Image (cartoon, rainbow, N blue to C red; front, side):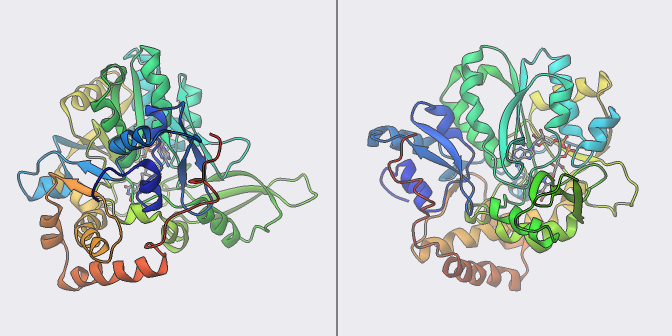
Length: 421
Ligand SMILES: Cc1cc2nc3c(=O)[nH]c(=O)nc-3n(C[C@H](O)[C@H](O)[C@H](O)COP(=O)(O)OP(=O)(O)OC[C@H]3O[C@@H](n4cnc5c(N)ncnc54)[C@H](O)[C@@H]3O)c2cc1C
């Protein structure tokens, strides 16, 4: 990308990830809205000056991400790793309800109850429209429990950072890697916000599926199009838990439940609908967070397991809070190594490598691609991909650019038209 792009161009060039950092920077000018096929996108107020839109583009993590300098292959592949732990929330409800072992929720509860955090920025399903998400600031155990478990659908947690900036109180922030990268870019230029974000926690993320993906998931469970959907759950209540829909047939009051295994729902349906920008994402493991948390997939998961989370400590602040949460009895953990992380997420290592070639290929044919500074992702491409996978990272990208019409602007029902925000 050259010159000074504005927010509008970032969306048109398929680089928006929907994190909401722009909406937090200027809530008077931008609000995030849901689209069917892409994700959450910024709606820009009519008459916004080009300079404002350009300054918002500068914060956007969709366009550019700065990694901490990789001194060796491990840092290039996994980012900064101080410690690796495996374990779970000691609160049985948080563990059961959580996606993996409820570790994110246990940290949230610890921060609210013991570290004097005023709240936790997190995402949960909307009650009025359960296919959509909302960002909330949870302050109690019940609220944290309600927001636990992964939503494999678009969410913009950064949008709430505007409230955190003005609150004058410390908060914990939970998001996907792109959300945490967006929050980090905002904090770089906003001292007040930096002061009020006491801890950032990233979940691992292989990509965000669109709202249309959830519709497809529901269809695949044989729920008719005209049924009323009461709730959609993607993970948790078991590990990894089943994808589950609660619904009522048209004209009836009895609630029915349909479900599908996580492996089938993610592998056969949802992952086909991830945003284009997610395919160019070199940070699936939350490298900008204090702590990043995902699944310890390195071992086979038994049918009756209650769930465990894999926790990567990335900063001294993360190390201190994690240790304190364990000492206070919120988490039960066992030490692991970088090898455990590598064995748990080999696909995310390969994806990071493939992104090097995907971005070059995209640029060569005239599509936009994010700029990654400092991370040495070329080393991951070289080492983690087989010769065939290297070729696929180029040819597959060409195929998808054509099939997804990436050379045409992303315009979703008038978002980029000058609608009133
Ligand atoms: C789209 C997506 C893709 C993922 N891909 C992988 C993967 O490839 N490998 C892997 O190991 N793990 C992946 N995860 C993470 C995994 O599902 C768990 O979130 C993680 O293991 C933490 O589990 P937990 O039980 O400790 O967290 P919980 O205690 O269940 O807490 C989860 C937290 O994540 C927040 N959250 C949920 N959905 C979203 C969202 N869409 N955006 C922002 N915040 C959200 C919740 O508000 C809550 O605070 C993915 C999650 C998502 C949403």
